[in-house]
Image 1 (cartoon, rainbow, N blue to C red):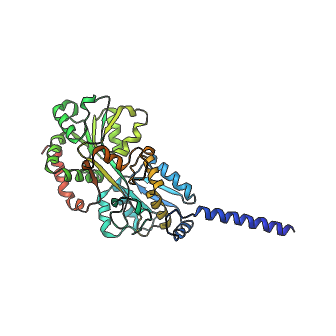
Image 2 (tube, rainbow, N blue to C red):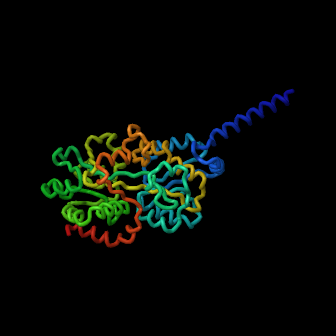
Amino acid sequence: MKHHIAAGILALGLAAATAGHAQQATVPAGYPADYAAVIEASRSEGGLVIYSNMADNNWQPLLQGFRALYPWIKVETLDLGSGTVHSRWEAEAGSGSRTADILISGANDRWAAYAGDSKMMDYQSPELAGLPGFAHPAPGIFTLSADPLVITYNAALLPEGQRPTGFASLVAKAVEDRGTFEGKVTTYDAARNSFGLAAWWSYLNAKGGDGWAELAKLGPMIRGEVSGGAMNEKIATGEYVVGVAVSGITIFPRLDQPGGELLGFAFPDDGTIMMLRGMGIPKGAANPNSAKLFVDYALSHAGQTLIGKGGLTPLRDDVDETEVRYTYQGIEKTVGKNNIIVAGFDKALIADAPAFVDKWKAAMAGH
């Protein structure tokens, strides 16, 4: 009798465990039924390593949501520079050492190169139908977010009448009042930073000769940086009074921190650059099923809402702007569709880069 009771208890325990196992493996609504196999295969994998140019505060909401769905997948994120995301993975890829299962960065030139060399897994996410076309620009390449580059300034040092509303506005104010702006303007140095190269290449391609002429007026007043965080800290301390084409995700969280009242920002009214943040699963990734689950979740309505809570800018038009700081569609409405400049994954950037950098250096010297 005791044997039968024990066996019954064991059977109930196994049934409960099986039910819990099945519940955790529920296929998201609208996904193909065979997606269950991807979920189950992820259980025997070794977690995820993600190389990105995102900080912990950007990651936290998305990772919490993902862990709630797939608690057996341990996710490790490394916050690297955009170019370092790729150079590190490329160096490690053939070595047999543990490397990234997912790459996420704003290094548009690298994503443009990958579009032609098939280094990323050609995965077709079930979420693509709910996303704009630029969310899947090439096989194996996705867009996680489209983040604005803004003008930032020290609100204590620049009275309201001196705060620029756009690039042309900044140039006019700086030329008129060199004493305030000389050596006190910063931006990403396109000659030293792949993120800055992609941003300024996209902007100046859109603006043409007039844009270059304005940059040459401002160039000698600019001190270039390679990090948005460093720019904002130096603006807050007064080392700079203004930054142009600064990544919004570096300043938006800073506004809510102690000393944030010293900073202000504006979406440039004559051309707001929207930087596409690329995402891909490298071919040969150690944990491909876990990587697929993560990519799909990040592109889903829930995932896009959570990246918005982390300070990034969601792509989906079904994300409620009241739940996040900004959406792509909301920024487009604010500045006007004609004033949106999308910095995507254009292969022409690779070919143009050397000549562009030479021209950039000349503009920085005022030529």
